[in-house]
Image (cartoon, rainbow, N blue to C red; front, side, top):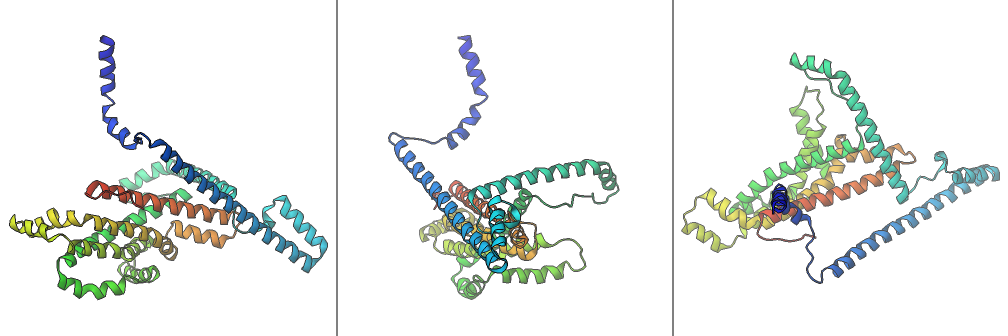
Length: 366
């Protein structure tokens, strides 16, 4: 009996973990295991098929370019030069390798290189901070800015910069689009009055939004020597991506069931009470659909805008690797492509989870 009491007391400390464990533990009903295994098997096969086709395609392109290099050497310099080119390619020496679509193994090797490079840069940062700790403490005590590490950013730092930029842009889009969408949705006259504005500016290219924001920010920050790339980037992203949320919010508000509005009138709710207790809850499914689209668009246009703004994110990283033309540059570009896709997918899942938490309409997304 004493042992049972002791075990119960020890287990009480972990009861708070039960809801969390239950949330992430798959719930299999009777007969669910076989369909789940079948679905997982099909997914695995599709991944293997994709990798196989990728490998064969990269090998075919490699052979095409290798043969071209050998034939060119034969035509321009003779048989001896062609044989030397063939031997150099076969040896694996980087100086003469065909620069074409990298294979899955090359992309994986580049990922490992980027991770190792991140560790080296982190060690350099730590050493710099340790070296400057005393000096920075004196500067801060005098009210001056501390000296910060200004070395090159690692790939992980670049990814984090892009995520920070897209979230700032998404927040800006939310703060602009949702209030305007609610106001427009409540008034048919305003919808008609501002429809031309939405239809004209919604399809504008992110490059044009960048140029517009650059003109304004450059003037507002005139005489300021600080780097404005982040400010320009996130404002451009927000303005370019907000339109889906604006349109969906207006549509959701305007299509609220009239019975709900009548109930609000019977209860004599004020304007703000009606908006926050009746209209917004009813509009949430469409609003979140718009927010999901906005976040996806923001992540897509971010790459182009970071390139134009010279912001230290994935867009600039991809362009610099393309311009670099090193033997592993193509593989690093493919790594960035997968990272962009995976982060985009995760951002969409996060928005879907938030939608399911705050909305009555639950769905699994597409």
